[in-house]
Length: 350
Ligand SMILES: Cc1ncc(C[n+]2csc(CCOP(=O)(O)OP(=O)(O)O)c2C)c(N)n1
Ligand code: SF4
Image 1 (cartoon, helix red, strand yellow):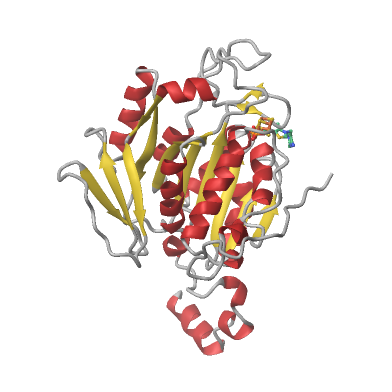
Image 2 (cartoon, helix red, strand yellow):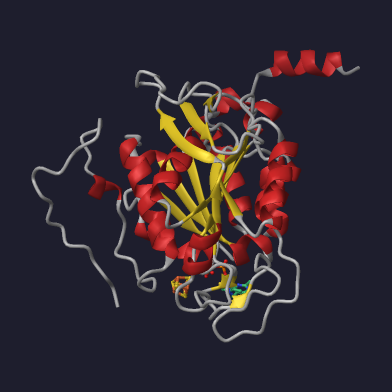
């Protein structure tokens, strides 16, 4: 069945700097289960892009396979999209990004899509510092194929019809930190106030911006024995602090108490304000982030918020020195330097 959103718009809906309403950033009506955390993440992406006045045609949405990977259909309906193969989104994103560096790349994946079949692909996108926002909608199970445990399921966690999981989980945030990711955050689908500024900061970051979002699967993994259900997550959440994103166009002011706030400047001049709840966090230190994640896990708490950011991040294009012009727009005269340049080059190699 095809679901369509009604086209009616209230004439006084607020508009952003481009004259677009929030509705212009929505997509098709979701066919996910009512209450699925993934829909809340789509809503947060819509809100962030609307508030940032992003031009929808400048965004490319990429995903793999899973309920999570279906969600790009449900947001940014006026943007480009590529729903790829299970676990293969990073290589499609790499190709697209190399061909056209002028787009904003939004990747959406699941914990199954990323931490199992797509793990190899994920690791290489991280280490190359591909300029994209990569969101994992983490429900600890394979929702689309009826709730089997995924590699991020905690030891002892049990889904609706499953046995307690005997295996150690893969913590994607720790993996990303160890592989050199230059922006790493964790959030919860039910915490819009935290998730929206994190998405804005991730989009503004130059390089690989990873957000692991705990996103309960209400149909297969939301029972009391599951550590990825709403009840457990709400009871065990802890945050590094509050996060506030200030775009470069706004005056940057802060009212946080001195000594407890930290400002992180993004490459476009925007600023992330962090009001630190945990004084142990040094946002510029991987070691600090990895240690804190372990400490909170030992206390049975899920640490959320911005965990690490490299303000001097150099993305793949800068590392390999590609042309400033998108490669897709280069013409033959750009690509063929002429006989004289070739002769000089050959001479220099003799
Ligand atoms: C090559 C391949 N293997 C297996 C599948 C079956 N399959 C579809 S989605 C999926 C896992 C989805 O889990 P996740 O990525 O966590 O997304 P969720 O549905 O939980 O959001 C699997 C195993 C497939 N589509 N393609
Ligand atoms: S099966 Fe689970 S992950 Fe998939 S749409 Fe339903 S609640 Fe969401």
